[in-house]
Image 1 (spheres, rainbow, N blue to C red):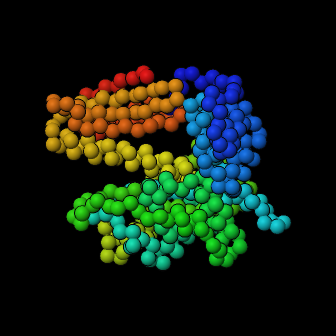
Image 2: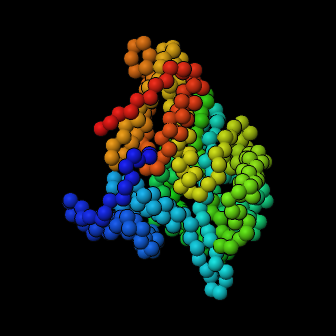
Image 3: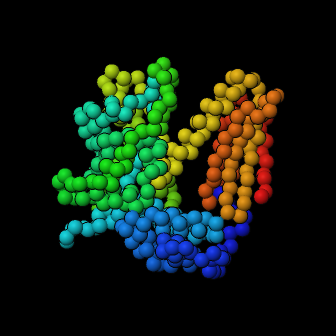
Length: 371
C-alpha cells in the first residue's frame, strides 16, 4: 500500500493512554521505530526472547496507522530478528542460522493425507542432502528440514517469538550434534485443517517445506556482489540452480508428501525458496489469487460472460483491494484482501488484470473508493 502522505509525525502521547504494561511497552517500541533509534533492535530481540508477542504486534499495529516508515522499519526488524540468529560457541567463529521455507502447490486426486507425510526415510535423506549438493545452500552449511509439510494455517499460527525459539532449537541441535528438546518446534506442528475434497476430486493444496540453515556469518557463498552485472549474474545463477532443483528434487518431495502408491501421481508447482516471512507472503498471495480464479471460473461456467470491477479502498490507516464479477443478473462472485503498507498497488492491480484475462474476462474497470 503506497501512501500519498508519508511525512513522519512528531512523537506524541496517545489520545487514549495505554491501559496495561504490554500497551505501554508497545508504545515505547513504536517510539523507538519512529525515531529510528539504535536501541530498536536490542528491544526487539529482548521481547522475542521473552515471548512478548503482544508487545511486538501491538507496536506494529500502532505504527501501521501512524507512520509508514516506522511501520516498515519495525516490521522488518521483527521479522529479521525472529527468523535469523547470529551466535558464537566458545572461541569458535560467528555463526548465522536462519529459517527458510519453500511454498509448493500440490495437485492430486482426493487431496493429501497428513498421515502419509515423511514416512520414506531414504527420500527425506536425499531431499535434505539436495539443499547443499544442488547449491541452494552453501557447501559448508548445515541444514535441517522439518519432517512435516505445513499447511497455511499452521504457518500463520507461528508467532514471531515462537519462530525465534524454533531457530534457537535448530541451532542447538546442529551445533551440539545431539538430540535436544524442541518444544517450540513440536508446537508448530499443530495438524492440517480438515479437507473438503472427495476421493474423486481434483485437489490443489498449498504446503510449505520448512528448514533451517546454519553457516559461518562470513561464508563467501552468501556474499552478494555490488550492484551491477556481477550482481545480476549472481542472482541469475542462484535462480537457475533453484529451477534445476525443482526438477531434480521433485521425486523426493513427492515421496515425502504421499505414500509409495500415490507419490508419483502428485504434480508439484514450487514457488521460490525464501526466508520464513517472505515465503509465507508468497504462498498467501498466490493462494488468494488461485482461490479467486477458481471461484470466478466456476461462476463464469454457470452464468456465462461477465465483467470485472477492481476496487481499491484507501483510508489514512489501511487499504484493501477487491474484485467483483458482475453478470447480467448482478454480482456473481467477489474476493477482497487487505494490502500491507508499502505494497505496490499498481503492480497488484496489474497482476489481477492478468489473472482475470486468463479467465477470458476482457471488460475490466478500476474504481478508487475514498473513505
